[in-house]
Image 1: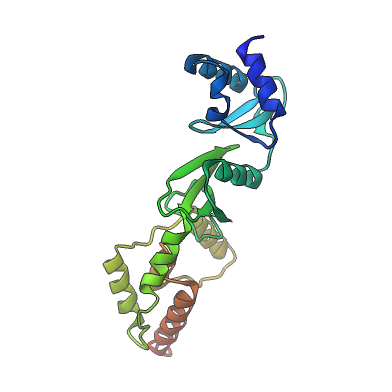
Image 2: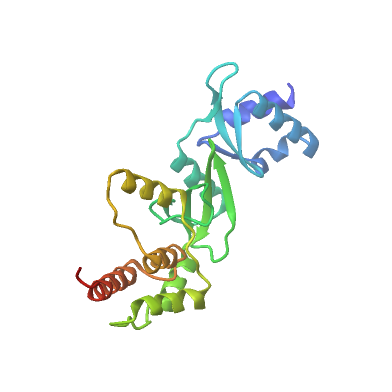
Amino acid sequence: MKLEDRMRQSIRRRSGSVVLRSEVAALGSRTQVTHALGALLRDGELLRLANGVYAKAKRESPSGRVRPLGNLEEIVRETAQKWGLVLRGMVSCNEAGGTEDGAVALLAETDSPRISRRLVIDGQLVKFRSRRRKHRDVEAHRSLAIPASGVARFVQDLARRLKVAYVPSSMDQWAETVTHLAGDEVRSDSTQDLLVALKRAGKLSKEEVAALTIRHLRERKQHVRPV
């Protein structure tokens, strides 16, 4: 029996959706395993997620798209388990307030202090990040005293000190376009934009952003002269 057929049978008998190269490496030499995996990829029986990581898949039609058999969250959880990572949660990039990479579809949070791994699952990019690092960033600045006045200058100084700048994401641009089309002229100012950037960077908590926003809006309203 050819190695390709033996590998196919071995993969089909396995539970779950994720297959690591290391799990089938003993079936043949390095070159043989590479060729067998390549054949299964071409046949649409496997989908490459990352270096050495594959998912069981099925081609929609003889010349159609190859899709994984498991759903996105199942594959992420199984991959994290096989990598030996403790997965604490998953959030979409929208729920996370955007990311530095606009193409990221899902953020997988782990307890690993240093993690830099990615998966591409059915065209969607999944990034693993350290939950500890995010929490440390927020805790490091949680004790800062929120001023009762001069909020705009305070936020600008904070962003400058932490080297954080506001870069509008595709969702920001979409929301601004929808607001404009709806005839709503309410727009965020530079201070509110910086608060969004500080939140996305993990430098401020939601509570701090809310408190600073409220004080900033009150202060801005006090400086608006009646016509």
